[in-house]
Image 1: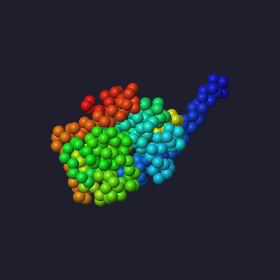
Image 2: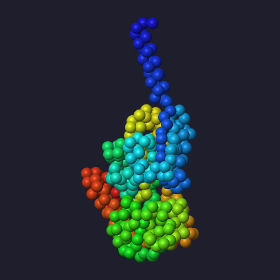
Image 3: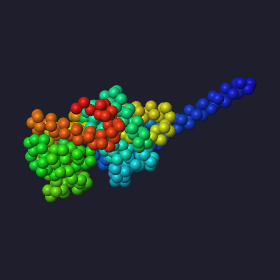
Image 4: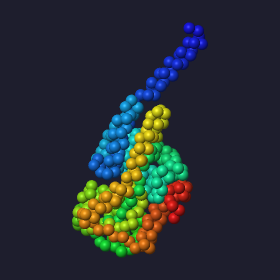
Length: 323
């Protein structure tokens, strides 16, 4: 064998070895911020099952726990530090690190539109810079939050109502005159029963998961915001993936996002179920409905503008309908 032939052979062997090394299956440690049997975990479970079924020899996801093992508001820190590789969570839970993440909840454009107009790329880059995490994709899109109440309302003025709230819409509740109260989900049923709160903010689905329909009389229309649940990944882990692994993961995320097309149907079915359970629909009159929604988005974007003045205008231009 000539020196030149030997060099070529050695190079071929090295390339073969490198390809074999790259093809080694990687195991990703995952956590979910939502209870195992809740709607907001169902799509993640299907995603994990699909990855593990189709990814043999490429990728495997090992779910190490949920909110019972890691508080939801700690998921972002765990991702940033690499304690876990991937998470089924929401930007609401790590807005302390990435306040711009709330733009996902204020989005009035679909994920497909955000991928096309640069909104996804911008917010993904912000996540990488600020929290060492990659925004892989969105697994809920089009579901809205609603005000659920035990007292009738007839306008956008909710003065006098004590509503269980979370940070993402606390400012909005204040803007319409309500008093927002922080109550853990596990204590809301009792708070409704005892009159500690008159109602709560919650998505169009999930009320039955917690038994709240038993203590709820009304749901206010229109809804507001765009309930966001996403898949996030530690950036260092993302960089370790080879081209085949990244392509495989992106394909699975695309599949998960395609399931969002069912969200509106699911919401309508849930509302019908609420009606059968005795929850009445209150439809605000046209002008009052417009004021209600305008105050919701004005309050939401104001919060992002205060926390992230440099990025807020760019995000608003891409995520909103220009209100």
